Amino acid sequence: MKCSQSPAKSRGRPREFDPEVALGSALQVFWKHGYEGASLAELTEAMGITKPSLYACFGNKEALFKKALDLYERDKLAYIRAALEAPTARGVAERLLLGSLDTYCGSAERQGCLGVISLLSCTNEDTSIRDHMIARRQSSDAALVTRFEEAKAQGDLPEGSDPVGLAQCLSTVLQGLAVKAQGGTSRGELKGVIEAFLAMWPGL
Image (cartoon, rainbow, N blue to C red; front, side, top):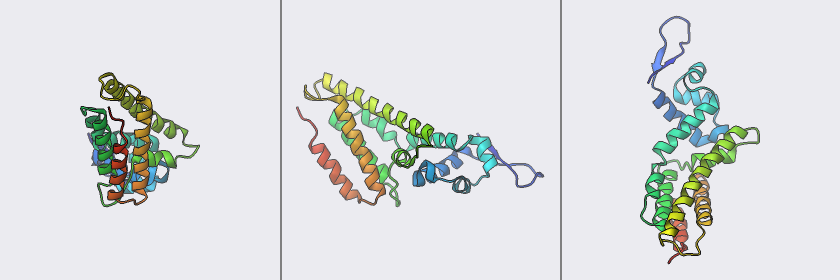
């Protein structure tokens, strides 16, 4: 798919651009600044397009952000799907934690988690974005609960285990890792947090 770049003047044919490439550039801006912190000027500059072209191809800023979230989940959070397929509940937790570490600290700039960054930076005026982010997080938490309920039924977790509590605890640690990663905590320190958490995982 190609979108047309609005020409600076009325004469001449519009210049085409690749929406996927432009969206990838927008994702990097959102990932660095969060939804609210990313200005349209920064987005269009990074994407190499004009504001009219942005609106024509992607819709408004909110629509662009949601498309960037889809791309982020597809490309950067693929490890989550693999984690849920781990043979044990502890394996699920380990894959999620190590996968998040690679995502949050996998580049020269520690970027943290796009979802956490954007949710924390949203003001009360950004209720639509806030609600959208919360809904995505709840969907992920629900998938974890289902997986841990299966593990408990299969005898992989102790009888007294609470799948909801485990999922919420793991989600909280994941979000904490994202915040600490963006704050400059070293990969080694975050790896230590992961190891400490896994050492407390309920055993049979």
